[in-house]
Amino acid sequence: MKYGKSLIAATLSAATLMSTAAMAADHAVTAAVTAFKPMVVIAEPGDTVSWENMNGHIANTVFVTADGEKQFIPEGAEGWTSAMGENFTTAPLTVEGVYLYKCDPHWGAGMGGAIVVGNPTNLEDIKATNPKGALKRLVKKAEKALK
Image 1 (spheres, rainbow, N blue to C red):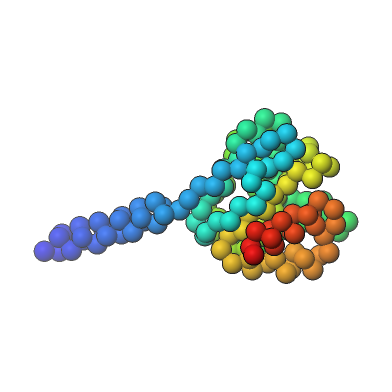
Image 2: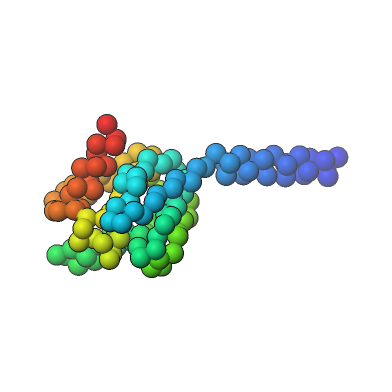
């Protein structure tokens, strides 16, 4: 009987893990000349984001501001920097909030994007930094997508 209960518990645990993984989505972003399409991705906790057609592009959450290097991601989240020219997929995004990213070689042309995972918990904090230029545009695009 003890073996039967263990087997049932293991089966239920495996089914729960598999159903959680099956419910997670992967959102595709395509690099096109000097734009990411879509520019804003709305995701749920546990989803991933994949960048395609990355020849000559990078997806990077590290921005250099007047204050130094800064990441515009939720507190407790991990940022990323993809390899130049390689397609890339994030680890599951489990921390809710707004993640801003850019393409380093094309940031001067405003090539960046936003990922909103669940509740945009850090959007007001990002706005409080008084973003300028392309960064400000990303914030406005994320706000518009949330309406």
